[in-house]
Length: 243
Image 1: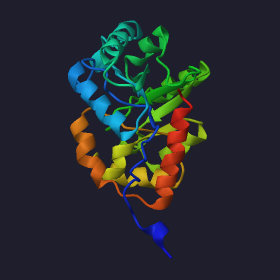
Image 2: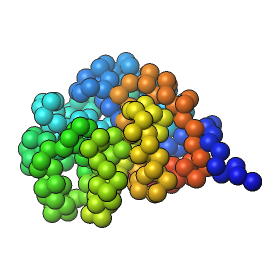
Image 3: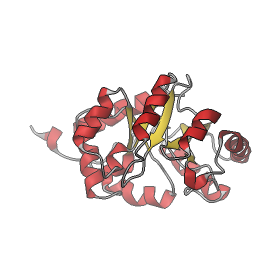
């Protein structure tokens, strides 16, 4: 009678046809994968799970100042050529834009948008505290006709439920990190991720994969209620519309 309250693992075919909209698999450009061999191994693993399309979203932030639109595009094309014949996942390029002192320069150079209509910009802040000017940066994004997609909002330690509600009132979109639901990023992030998933506050879901080992380690721990699994299915459907 109360099966909907019981937590269970994801169905075996959960990732069949899935599209990932956030990962750091493009090798050698940030704190994600360091070489093409490991990246291709991860892609093969995901392909076996059923994943069919992926957005590669390298960090655009002050820490990786050499990452610019002009620099990343040829590196992405080079990596795609290496993947040919080894994996059939469709790869597309986007970026995760940090709202820091380097953001205005990326703003001027042009975004690597998250969607085919070039209207969505994946944004993040520092986990501990946000740049004092982050609100004005997001406002400028909106003024230019883009919609911010806030990456993994559950991980921001400074953010309260009231803050999330204010962001949603501004029509910002939210992207869930799948592993947040497992506790991979700590208890507070896990608690907030379940809360926002149950309250239908997310718009997309991504792996944010930096290393395959982490995915293999934490995914078996993922147990969800039926309504949470249903909501994740809806988020995957939203993902597919970005390609």
